Image (cartoon, helix red, strand yellow):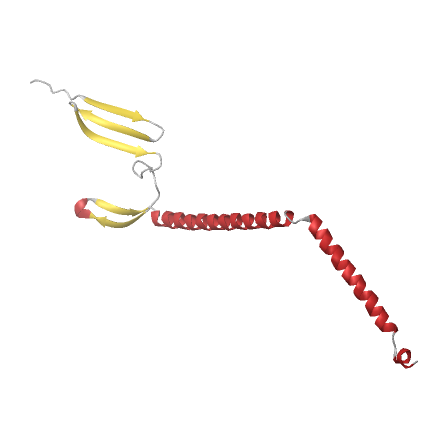
Length: 144
């Protein structure tokens, strides 16, 4: 009897973004596994789970490993990140408004401001003098 030799090779291609593993038998690819760094799969990992349903005819079972809780936490984390982005945007808008206010305050013409203040001061002093003169008047001054 002749012996049949099985030629099987495992080819591995690795890069920082993904790892590819191929099982080749007699020059034909029999299996191909691709795992991306950003999309790590569940196959091959060890998890603690609870059997939720058994299908004896298919010799299989459904195991709950808590992925729903993980998805809920990821959505909650996403919500918090969105809120942080919104707050950051509001702060940037407020910062721009404050910078514009500061710029307007710095752009005031100091000479014009001093001139206006002196004019108002002269007007105030004139009003005080006329008020004091009116206070000194009485009916007796008009009778005599």
